[in-house]
Amino acid sequence: METTLTKTADIRISARHAKIGVGVVALSMGAVFILQLLLARNLVTPAGTPVGGDFAAFWTAAKAMAAGEMTAIYDPVTFEAWLNRIAPAQERWGLSWQYPPTYFFVIGFLAYLPYGLGYAVWTGGSIAALAASAHASGLRHWPLVAVIFSPVAFHTAVTGQNGFLTAALFLGATLLPDKRPVVAGLCAAMLTVKPQLGVLLPFAFMAGGHWRAFSVAAMGAVALGVASYLAFGIAPWAAFFESVLGTTSRISTGELPLFKMPTLYAGLAMIGLPKSLALAAHILVALMAIAATVFVWRNSRSPALKAAVVCCGAFFVAPYAYYYELIIIAVPLALLAKDENGRPFDHLILAALFLLPMLLPGDPRQMGINYCLIVVSIAAFFILRRIKTDGASA
Image (cartoon, rainbow, N blue to C red):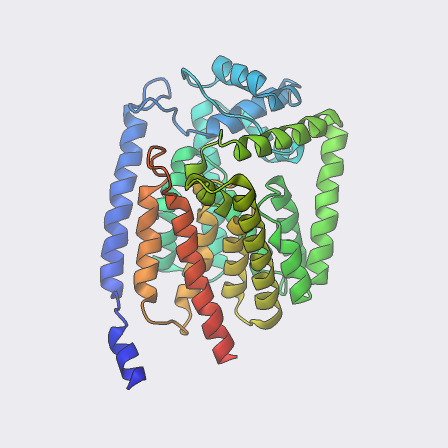
């Protein structure tokens, strides 16, 4: 009787309905994106924001690097001055440069491209990298289209951020350590350009016994650091660590936009929880994410589940992250959705995960409502259900 009731309650969304929904949302958001580009004047959209949004930070930092000023731009005032001088006109940017010196190897080519072409190459190239990685991982046809044209991908493209590239590296690091450990290790090493997001990878490699991937990742990270020292000297690293301390302070004081951060600390801080309690809760959940990673990578045979627990867990471990990085979770969730070990209401959960990012990043005036954390929490719930199913079928 219980089995019959469970099957009856399992509300399914047909493939036809899913395709129609994806198509409508993709066409609508794509039309908005193209219209903004067509109506832009002097690289500024009708909304008053620059074409590419945060891409201006990457492009400007590359220009500063080419001019030998990579150390100076870690100072927010100096970086603002650079943006005002060469980027699309804005009354105030409010951006800061917080990436390690190794990131200059990634964005250096942008110094030799005009702004518009640079944005097109940066965004188009990173989308292609994610699409190729997702296709190689087994995500094909409509599921791949759903990811590339999802609302969360729209946010990444509009902001000109690096989420697509980060997501592609996560796929390589989490799906290939057994088959191609050198590639997985190199992808993990490259993720050190965003060190706050890759914390779970060493635990995953060790728990899974992927020592070759672990060694390549460690040596690759050291090699990147040495290369940046030889290319730029020690001064940019000193400036970077100083900027990290400044960023940590700005998060704790609420100066940074917490409503745009899909992290537990940000969510708890937004509802008025004392900073010490919010931090304690964040650390506790981060330890739980580490434990879940170790458990899954030690016991599960599902590559998709292993990738999902690391990619989603990154947002529960990272001290800060932003909504445009949620594309990192999309492909692992889509791969999980292909598994036959689904559970009741999976389709509704996946539909919610596809549509809810349309509300992101939220409204700063709606204190206490962190839509970004809600999306991550639903993703974590979906993954936990699959962990339970995976354990039952083992």
